[in-house]
Length: 122
Image (cartoon, rainbow, N blue to C red; front, side, top):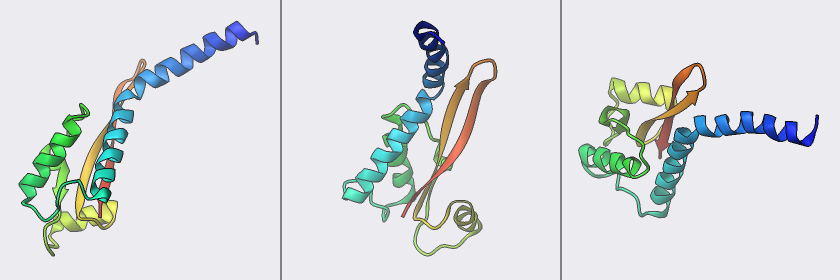
């Protein structure tokens, strides 16, 4: 395979792959920044009202152009063990804040595919 053919082939593979995963990369970057802020002590306090936690979490992700609805942000308050908390622990593991992050991929000829990723803040 000649050099020009290889460059052309890579262009047809790499460019669409990069284009299709921009949203997922932004969501991952927002999650890394969120976890870094939480670990450094500059993030949101998980002792606050659940609505305040949801709003500040949503505001953080919106600054990265990632929309996460309130019902996908689930803070665990106190020692509650209701059905939703148990389901979250079974699906994701133990944590104090669960965020379901949509990873959107744009695939040629197929369209949009969305995978859900559960982020746990302990």
